[in-house]
Amino acid sequence: KAVVHWFRTDLRVDDNTGLSLAGKLGKPLIGLYIVSPQDWEAHIVSPARVDFILRSLEMLKQDLERLEIPLWVEVAQNRNDIPRRAVELCHQWGANHLFANMEYEVDELRRDAKVVQLARTKGMEVQVVHDTCVVPPGELVTKAGKQSTGKAFAVYKPWYKAFLARVAEKPSLLKQHPPPPANPLSTRTHFAPLFTCLIPAAPENKSLTPSETTTVHTLFPAGSHTALSLLDTFIAQRSRAYATDRNLPAKPGTSMLSPHFSAGTISARTAICRARSANAEKLSGGQQGLDTWISEVAWRDFYKHVLAAFPYICMNKPFKPALASISWIHGAEATTRFTAWTSGHTGYPLIDASMRHLQAEKFMPNRLRMVVASFLCKDLHLDWRRGEQYFSSQLIDGDFASNNGGWGFASSTGVDPQPYFRVFNPTLQGEKWDPDGEYVRRWVPELKDVDAKQIHNPSAEVRKRTGYPPQIVQHDVARKRVVEMYKEGIERGK
Ligand code: FAD
Image (cartoon, rainbow, N blue to C red; front, side, top):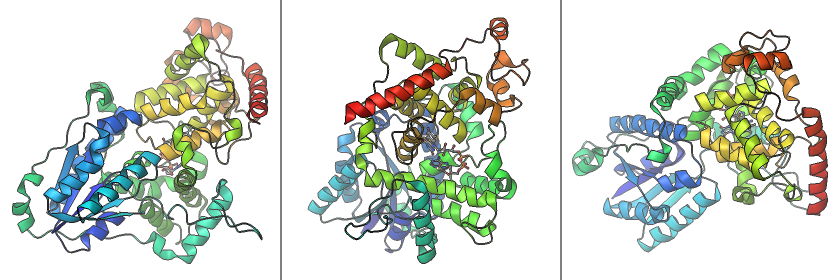
């Protein structure tokens, strides 16, 4: 009898909980990955992310082959067939045990429930285990009151305090899982056809153009070995200045590990453990840069905990039901504004630079994600879900929980949000975080000769001369109006 590990968002051999447990059974181990073009379509997975996943699969296949473990990549044209196909394959391979790491989104939980049901009819055991978060979702709850039990957290700071306390009390949460042992050599003969499986190409509607491919491959090498070396380089070279540099878009101040966390080519445990080793074995109370970085990695856990506790956010609903009734603008004006935003022609230099950066490199620094997200809903008065979907369609690191969490924060409809009346001023944000205008000049070539003094607020004359567009809305007017819109929405929602 064999055992199968079904890879999903965990494309690595090291520190992979499900794979490690599967390896401990002492049976021949087979790796499975199911490509679902319909899932990619339904979940608006970007071509850059699809490409990153396929490249990482190629590397994973090589790593597994060194252990004599085959990786079978199945393409399921109909996503509803996935559970049946997974169970069928296991049956065909004579496997009576299937392992996988849990994904917490609603579609994925439903899929796994079906797998368990079907597997039972074949006498097969399925184990879907926690892996992607350091602390499994559901384990941290607020303090119980006299008459109430603890509840899921919806604010980061107390959650992080509870997170640190839990890790201190249960150090095994950060224990890394060993890779599975190598299969006996006979596996290669026994499962010979499985070793010949090729990684498919991206479906046409999820393919990058040749020039996008070059850019993305240069900027974001895939696979778990790259992830580990990025992590080590970041810790050695950039972590000290991280607390300040992370907000400066002209500087490469962050780890750029997000595509890896999204695809699971590195685990949060490994990342936090290595950062802790460089931080005098502390998660907090050590060096400022590393403390901050560890707490940022924990934001990813936080948003997954939120998703698991409040699954309705997977269904296009805001976390705060009271903010479901805001009258966002629709129609032709909305289309014009949305196009200006996506293409980087709003007349606000920092917004336009960020959006053009996203389009060109399929990535945007965190500070700018907050600023452009706030601009979409609070200045352009467009539904934040349009922005959330657009980000997902572009980002190489698209991750439902973090993306939804980030949009919920910026639009004040999510957990731990900005208060709705706090609206980023896109000009002041530019002056603060890109004081010399270096980032704007990099992405908005029309403004490359404009001096630092007016780069974030070019005069009408400069705009005319350079062809840079006028401001699509007046920030002060838009800000006042949006506060009214939120108030009206809250009234309506009562
Ligand atoms: P670093 O600063 O080096 O941080 C290390 C890791 O910590 C990141 O790779 C990421 O996994 C995690 N992290 C850091 N900041 C956050 C955060 N605010 N929320 C959650 N996790 C965080 N991140 C995604 O991975 N996928 C998304 O789809 C996504 N969409 C976002 C949308 C909006 C509107 C906002 C405001 C943020 C979004 N983020 C998303 C979070 C954050 O912007 C990126 O994780 C970060 O910019 C990635 O760069 P890095 O790897 O260099 O980060």
